Length: 254
Image (cartoon, rainbow, N blue to C red; front, side):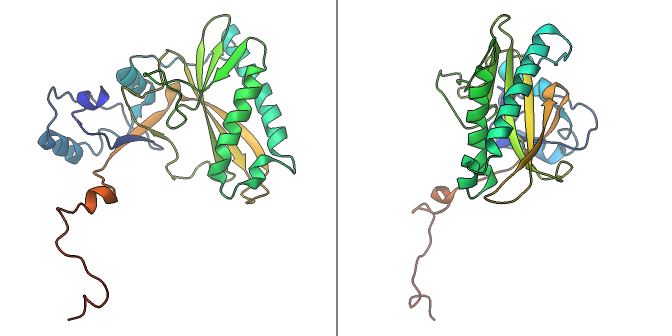
């Protein structure tokens, strides 16, 4: 597992998209991760994990390679053409006055509609199938990267596709919008293949969104950074054995 190779033996560590690019960091190996080694790594690795190759991250954490796209090659050209045609159909559908997206209150809730439309329209393309990727346990899983898996039937080539909705004018924003958590049991990357992200710009007109253009990104040259944090939920905080006192308004008076 990647967490062992980095000397980070806990789950709440995740990778975020990085804008700044420096140099590929070294891999720190700790055969038996401890709290001490974890904290030391976090304290000393501020610059080491700011420019991590996404392709290398995928290979280390899943054992599968990220294949660069060759747009002029036969198989890759067919995959790209299929995505292009499917996006044209998807954009046309989502921009109709009666679009299902106009029933949503938040733009994030529209993402699932784009995934479903792309899955349908890509599968309609000759020689391509598109589906939700299964995880390592064989289960369908909507959450987590990647959202869709395209198969080129003649060659067996796999292309993972992750749609993202982005408000126009914010392509150069520093807002963190890409997350990847390496997980052995529930990871969905089970094949070598292309890794593509499709960013779909919208006008920000809530409830009457218009989708303006799209950008297909090859993630084989993508860089990410690691953000390490310790976290807990309310179940962890308010355990009975940790609560010293409880009271109501009257009981709080001196």
